[in-house]
Amino acid sequence: MTRTLTTDAVPPSILQSSEFIEKTYRKVTLRLMTFIFVAWVLNYLDRVNISFAQVYLKHDLAMSDAAYGLGVSLFFIGYIALEIPSTLYLQKIGARLTITRIMVLWGLISASMAFMTTPTHFYIARALLGAAEAGFWPGIILYLTYWYPGARRARITSRFLLAIAAAGIIGGPLSGWILTHFINVMGMKSWQWMFILEGLPAAAMGVMAYFYLVDKPEQAKWLDDDEKALILDALSADRAGKKPVTDKRHAVLAALKDPRVYVLAAGWATVPLCGTILNYWTPTIIRQAGIQDVLEVGLLSTLPYIVGAIGMILIARSSDVSLERRKHFFFSVVFGAVGAFLLPHVLDSATISITCLAMISVSYFGAAAIIWSIPPAYLNDESAAGGISAISSLGQIGAFCAPIGLGWINTVTGSLAAGLMTIGVLVLAGGLAVLIAVPANTLSEKPLTDK
Image (cartoon, rainbow, N blue to C red; front, side, top):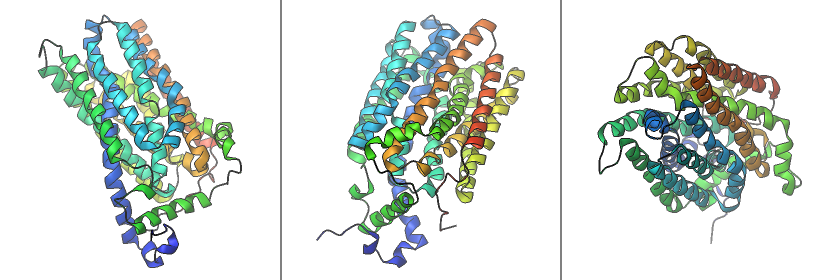
């Protein structure tokens, strides 16, 4: 007889055991987050490695800074347009098939960038890459809500986001090493090898996702019945504290009509704004400070990511322990705004420039870890997919506009100063929007019992 997965099947003493609870979630985290972590490292590496190839692309493809900024931004057209449909489709067919499709496509497209010969090819490749990656971020956020209760999500999201820091830490030296050691190998330029060697592993891991992932706890053969029941009970308790949806057909539309979705979209926009500076202009900023060696630029570019990762862990842990999100988010955002305000005035100093980039990095990672803990707390299961993907898509408008603006300003004025100051103002405004407009009683979470 198949055992029913309810809390009635599990002795209360087991359910209440802190050791059993932590053992179960450690097992889930080791199984799922290891894969997600590596996948996200590859995702971000393929998305931002153009920052290290920028100087080569500008020469070989005859591109200006404005053209580079346009190419960076075109990524977000397909990404924004397809993000909501992709996330809703994940809810229909499951994470395994969705993640497989996304990773295989983005890996192949990223590798194909090795064969670009004109700026037009660059534009097309970036737009296709964005379309292929659409839904990966909100899809993973939604996927985590199938496994972790609300009180654990800021910390687990921070672990997920550590992959971005890891991509920055690994990507700089790796890209620098490839660009230095693969010159004219088999008749190809080093930047071509960079796209191939960093793109194909993502496609291979996408195939692996089909065989490795499961969509929900009930399907996990690597969990026993007691562990499944514990997870399902925690998720049920989360749902019990939320306002029920009587008409599931219109649940997604209800989420899109919620003004808090748009407030959070404004808050989320602060993250890609900071990310534009950190991910696409850090090597250029370091070069402007007088560092010209490709490998040295790659190594120095890791420092902001290391500081950002440490800051994110501390901020996310504090937020989970106190169950406070809005002030933690605003505190994170202030770091980025101050860094963006100061950076234009210190561009001739590598040390101070990297310090400002580290402040922006703390904002980037810390704010991202906190902001995604808020939507699942007030959106019901049926409306979560639409709400989360809407927040992500709307917030990415900033990611689309910022690279174009920075590239154009740098081309026209020869300086990033005006663009950096503008980003600082917008980041601070987004933080204030969340702090002021999101009700303090929005969260329906309960403290962790193991503290």
